[in-house]
Amino acid sequence: MKKNDSISKIMSTNVISVHQGQKLSEVRHIICDSNVHHVPVVDGKKLVGLISFTDLMKLNIVISGADERTIDSIVDQQFTIQDVMTTELTTLANTDTVRQASKILAESNFHSLPVIDAQKQIVGIVTMTDLIKYLNDQY
Image (cartoon, rainbow, N blue to C red):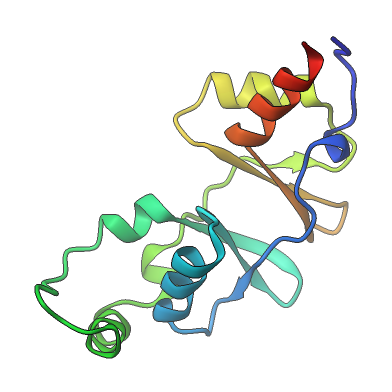
């Protein structure tokens, strides 16, 4: 196993992100429709937060029997992206290694790491699934 492989070898680069001013229902649809569990929040191109599927599940809203449009309306009336996103992020630099990513994720209670460049712009994301696939490819 190569301990110093670049993080770019395993990170997803086609990252779907949202801007702070977008509606929270848009994030909900991205997570539901795009099979992603983590959505970076950007201001311009700079990473400012992250919303996960778990963050959305923590919202206390009553939607029993509601249709999609009603759910979106309730979500957007009660919450903003800033209300839900995590702003204290642990990130990787695009020059970091797979080993650094695995160490951080193994010692933390989160499941993804945004990858940023020198200007703090998102260039990728690494998830636990990416690391498992990488490990599987080694054997």
